[in-house]
View 1 (tube, rainbow, N blue to C red):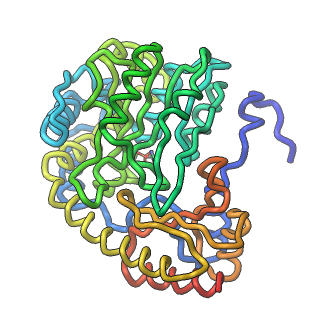
View 2 (view 1 turned 30 degrees about the horizontal axis):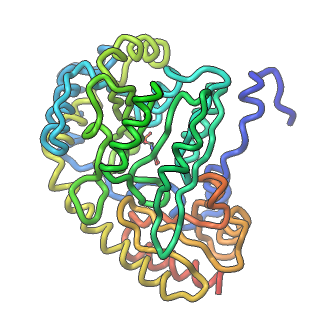
Length: 385
Ligand SMILES: Cc1ncc(COP(=O)(O)O)c(C=O)c1O
């Protein structure tokens, strides 16, 4: 049916191939879905209990627009403990998900016609969020050589024009697992500072490194009043995807602006879930470490099997719970994703969902049981043999 009577911007939003494939896979009941970005572990009990207790204590009303002061303070402690970063609570804004944090950040800074320079491949929702503001994205692809992704900073800086309002980066990156070094972050921040443009850094995966406790954060290199927003979420590292709880950091002078925009957006984040968030940050380190140990095993299983297959090009991811690979001779990832569902009952995310430069790649989320993972790999190998 023709789409009409909506904003032109909405009517012309391109389809999201990742979401399309997920829906296609759901139509086939025996499909194994490794196409969505979430672990199979349930939220740990200590987090559930804290939230339940908050409900029983009557924390079921509206709360402050920017979140419960106790959670804002807990996040400050968390940054001090894990990143050695000192911040005031007026720089942390609680949101109903990382996705909401992303919309708040982008809709607060972008006007129609602005340009955003985005490092790709990138989680498609960020591109959609930019599009909703009627700004344009300039994609700057990472380079892939010898099983490694890298960023050419000159290429990034050369893409900035007088119309550029923000540099957008996901670090660590969904889908590649690449992350920006602290030294590069310092250079990007300095470059942005000189030009008075924003850096928006999605750091949702910054606790998913396999060889370190955390990935660098832009907060470690930024000045207090830099034009920097970082996006974060409880979804991945604390197994809380269904909770819809995240946070945004910004300079202190952004607090009033974000409060105004958030008020019109959602009034306030859900109240009792935030108490689960406090417990997650306070007592969640053992859970994160155990989850990473399991994911590391799975990462190696996937890498070893895919890398042994002469038809597949891949690498060992340094972070996140994604394997990213391409199949020789398969240049259309959407077509391959459909074929995997049709012929193998396996749903994976097509690379075309992550930007122009990775049309022939596929993303597999390996945060599942070993049995499910091995069954999925069997199915993949059967279809592409
Ligand atoms: C890079 C990135 N940012 C944000 C999100 C969304 O986080 P949330 O579940 O908090 O909305 C995702 C989810 O896949 C993601 O990959």
